[in-house]
Image 1 (cartoon, rainbow, N blue to C red):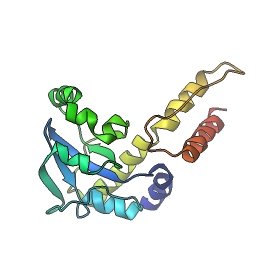
Image 2: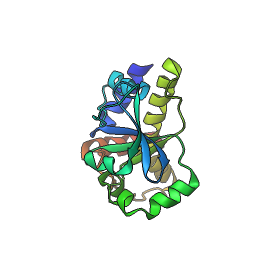
Image 3: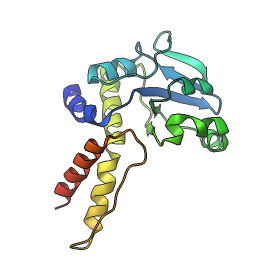
Image 4: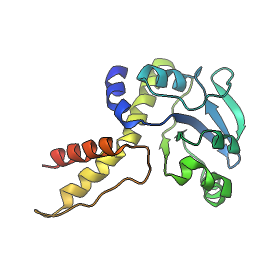
Length: 178
């Protein structure tokens, strides 16, 4: 099951992924190589952007500003963010200035048990694939609404998808829209 996910995910990931859980507007939990999520990334052949030391799978609390150490990374937020924290982050100059946030490279996954073994690893991989495949779904829905002979103008501003991958995804969406 992971091999099929890996095959689908590898072309979509061109940057390291920083896997985090947001605690409050100033702190997070970072999942390292020794976590369920980090080892799942490794099995999927995807790079974990969090290269800092972790202990027993994660490091917490980590100050939010540590994310600036990973300017090329895409942020993957595992689990929900409380509404009050989401509002505080939207007003945070630091959060908005982080390269991943400013570049639109933030994805949110549903809550996944970080200690749940193989079932959680599979759920994490499926959620990651679903989040990253959102571009195809958006374009597919738009294409289905086009009148015959209509023109769709589409683009990606998040920089985590290469032009080649984006073209292929749009072509795949067009094929599926027929």
